Image (cartoon, rainbow, N blue to C red; front, side):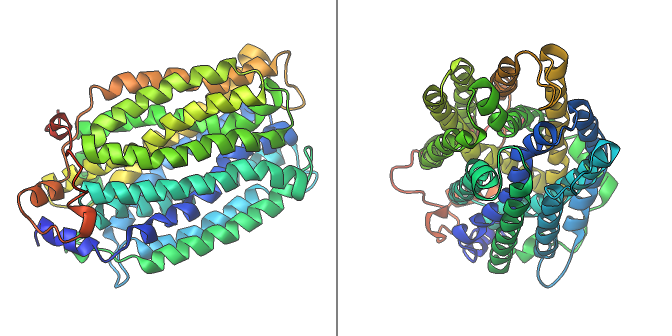
Length: 473
């Protein structure tokens, strides 16, 4: 079947129906990433060194289970498709693990607290990997033309920002004022249960409304070791993976540390994180439409490079902020750069998946995304190391032992470390080039453009930058 047939097949799934799934996939894991340090380290007193060890152990486990999960997904053959059965299973399991993570039994401390944290943090990340490897693999399959893909990705990143409003901005208010207090954990348990139910409902709604392309489930099922070796030999995998990791780790630091930045660096109550996070998220949401339009005119690669540079510069303002107002102004600049990365980073990854399928004749998006997940898992390790460094350099070990200057400690954690990482990523992105999706070439050559704006993109589109279509180096 031709690439133009893929364009027609994609019309069966409305972009919004696929995109809304991001709301369900994002709520649980962002609650974990945004509140777990506050919950375990600052309130329950888990030592930062124990936190760092758990994250390192997880990285080892995850390096093993991620490729296996992706491989099993690629080989799945059912009348419901390859990805949908996994989505139905992974959603409830992730929600249950998240609820357990924030439901530590009263009085549990010491080794028992470390083990509880380790077990359920690892389960959350494992089920999140299962969920997102399958969800992410559907983006290039359902929307093979980049302009339509950019629309779907822009919508799903918008839903992710809605999830962030809930899981990050609204959470401090729910956990400290509505369902609990600043120094208790009861509010976290109730909030996690509410978010878990919402996430499951959205994931099931999305999964039942999408239609996978049968052409992608080839008769030959991808092999594990040959597939892994092919991925490891692909230079694009290393270039895009490492450069993307700089962005992912930087934002992981920001999301995990913002509540403690507000508490210690700004000297305010944790619930004020609502206003700082809301500004960042709202600006990001508004920026998505602008960046998506830039993608349509200049191409994903050019836009990705520009957004990376904007994000790197934005962290300087947060370091010097000394009040909620100045932090919100600086946060708005962060939101501009972040929205550009949200609009483009997954499009760059999708191009790598397209290139691999075109080269090898196999659609192994699940395995490929799971391999990319290895770089994402560096996120947990380096966040753990970054947190541990606060104890080494600033004396912050936990909420009970915050050291002499926890305010400076979290300025480093939230501003300096992300600035260094994104600066490295912005420079390195200039040396990355990825081919345009094959379906784009088919449509440009006069193929079936009946899929609405998939092929057209509007009369004002100038088309991708020619440099954006270079062959992979």
